[in-house]
Image 1 (tube, rainbow, N blue to C red):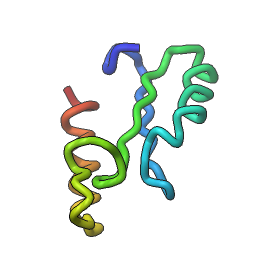
Image 2 (cartoon, rainbow, N blue to C red):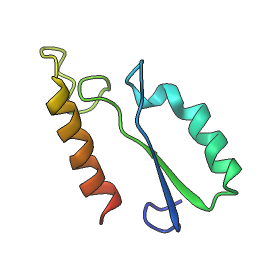
Image 3 (cartoon, rainbow, N blue to C red):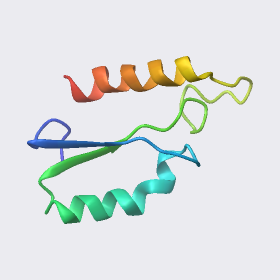
Image 4 (tube, helix red, strand yellow):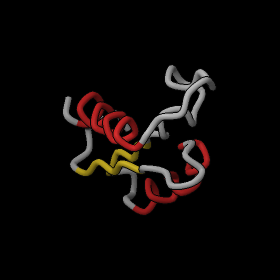
Length: 79
């Protein structure tokens, strides 16, 4: 689904491990459970994926992790 096209948006925030790829089977199950009528997205913890926040050289504290999720929500869900 195209983000923002569904009436329901589900954001999966990982636990441990903090990489969203680990949760793909769960996200696929949610998508099927909602008959494809929900946008299912995930946001890995900063530093836990292969994206721009993962230089492998620093650890993000709790406030930075919270800010990372808030930025994701503003950029991806509130467009």
